[in-house]
Image (cartoon, rainbow, N blue to C red; front, side):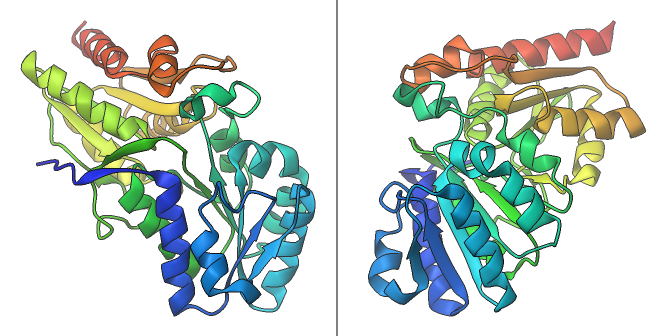
Length: 316
């Protein structure tokens, strides 16, 4: 039974999580590229001013500083928008962080179409793929405030580079902080007709789609893949071997994201019909989150259509 306990933006989960883990772990430090307010770092700065570094609008320098700080045993959390956390600093992440396995936590807000009115220049839809392909990088995309807070705290004890992706809009809270383990998928509903694998904001939308499908007599299994890398292949296989078809749902380009990871596991072990929900090799545009999710085919109605199509392919 899924229970909604409130609504809050996932970036606030990050802000609350980094404060809580910093109280327990003195090695946690925060860096930002002129976006402390947007990344909800005000309380952290208030409590730990000596553990905060304002790098200014110099994202490449921020990543390099963070890499250096790990040598002294610090656990740096770098913070800026997802577009600037990845596309602007890919070289520094690859060379200074990943190549030498530095323990840097790259925390990225304002990802995907739900950034809304800021438009295509800020709505990065390629970052999961970019980070997924970096050797040794762990990629986490939590679904709500509680899970983002839990993930923010968990990565402090996780050795190695991490990309943590979250967003700006207020979103339903339907998990608890206890329901998160890095690399372990979370099954939210049980089903027999189709598996829906989702991450980030699309997990809630997948649950809305599951209700519609249920009313149509279709049994959908919704699985929250909050850790895109390393993927919980066991959970994916267990589900698709039961249902025989799949839908992947992500606030990201269908090329290179969660859907491709699911398809790779299926193709190697148990090939099944799969439909992709995500942006179709395109940039976004300005609009409200709801408008954009509908226009680009990331709403519940499109997930329902994809599920029905996957089932029809299975039954041919």
